[in-house]
Image 1 (cartoon, one colour):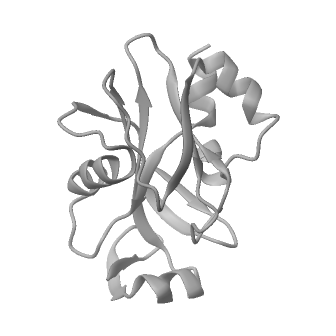
Image 2 (image 1 turned 180 degrees about the horizontal axis):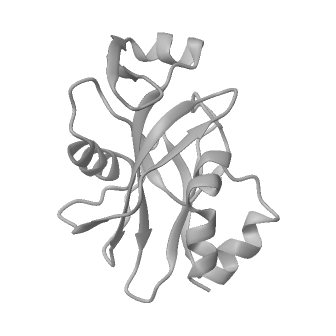
Image 3 (image 1 turned 90 degrees about the vertical axis):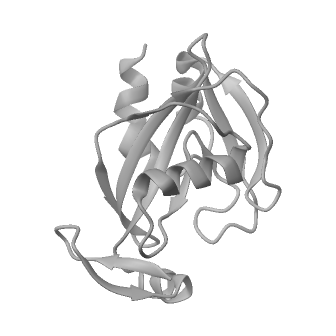
Length: 161
């Protein structure tokens, strides 16, 4: 079940994920920008089977927050599930909102530094690699990136240059 939000981020309902996706209902989600000690950013390509933006590149791990789940707990869960990263210190970034014809959500955003191994969840991540901020900005103009991450954190990435 997914908590459904009003425009001012108050929980007003809970619906199955399938209904939330079908009706593009406003919900909450997490996202975490993973960097290494050198300042590189972890970029990955979503699998072809993802329900939103399949086969697109992304530079944020994260996902939908379950009904009743704390946003911090959700980002810890998603980071471990998608990239196999756990036990890392998370730094909160400003929250944001994103909506298009495929998704509509309030984003709880974080960043972390990780120099350990990255282990992809095969159902969600098809490929991944570290990129410098300048390389990522260049790739934003060349590759098909998910529009939500680009809208929420694109300016942040450009400010790293």
